[in-house]
Amino acid sequence: MIEIIIEALRNSVLITGLVVVMMMMIESLNIESKGLVFKGLKKTKFGQVVIASLLGSIPGCMGGFATVSLYTHRMFSFGALVAMMIASSGDEAFVMLAMIPEQALILFAVLFVLAIIAGVTVDFFHDKIHSRNCDKHDHSECGAETSCTDGYHESDSDSRKRHFGWKRILMFVGLALFIAALASGHLAHDHAAHTHEHAHIQAHEHVHMHEHHHGIDLLSEDWMNVLFAGLSVIVLFVLLFASDNFVEEHLWKHIVRKHLPTTFAWTFGVLLILGFALQHVDIEHWISDNTALMIILATLIGIIPESGPHMVFVTLFAAGVVPFPVLMASSISQDGHSSIPLLAESRKSFAWAKLINCFVALAAGFAAMLFM
Image (cartoon, rainbow, N blue to C red; front, side, top):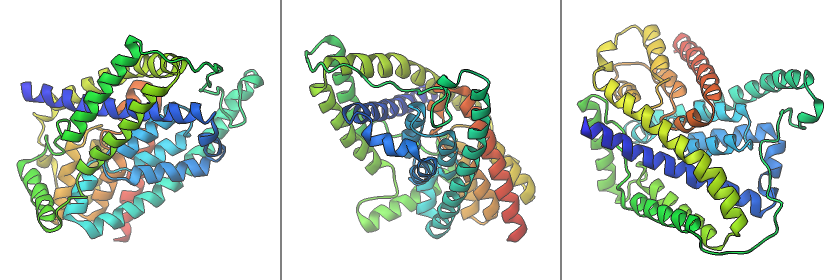
């Protein structure tokens, strides 16, 4: 019980920290450039979908967190969010690259194409529905991008006064501690904490073998943690040199007070519940030789915003127990921890995005079963 609580707490700190850092970077870039950095991106829904698909294709949850942050800042469309969730395979991507590299690259390419198609399609219908809703209300509330709200307001203050008040110091110390924990590996989480012991051992045997031959393991999330620790240092400099108005209004009030508590609370709550629930559920006992049933099961399990349960399908595919359509359906439906911060920001968006992901997973899985 204590181990589950500690693991949930560690993952919650990691996820919340990464999301907050990305939000701060996005806020800083947008304000300091007066919106020019994201101006071109906001004009092209297709470009947003492509970039979100690329971010989702990055192994692990980092690209997913970035996409969720951009979506909550109204810089990515709903179709882009869906595209990321389809393209993302969560932390399982690292294990697939280690265990089944050739099949993994094929799978990632297929997911990337499906993500773009689904994202563009979702935006097409989403814009039509949104535009119809705007027509029923005051047209002045609807922007050029068929959105009923601008969703983001730039600071109109030109003040560049700086002083080291307690809020700036508190954020600086908190971020410095997060960077140290991230770089040292103290926040690294166990990808297979809730899976069968054989799956965990087999995955790590492949990873350690890769480390032995190449010295640096690029198929783990360690190098990405170091990368984000480096990016977080940039935010430290922002905290040092940004104006009082920016620190107070944008970093403290908008991100720390509004987003940080809800993101952490939802993340910790979800991971804690899943930790206790998955301890009493042996997913491997549900496995059968019925491919159609396995596609449905893999899709439904994909709704769980957690990395552990999906590792079973990766391991079983590598062992030749389940076919490729099952692995593809699982990879499309699930997105690791990426969608947990979305729960804190918009339960409606989470529900709709997951519903669309499940539909695409079932359609793609059964289509692949018919042609393979």
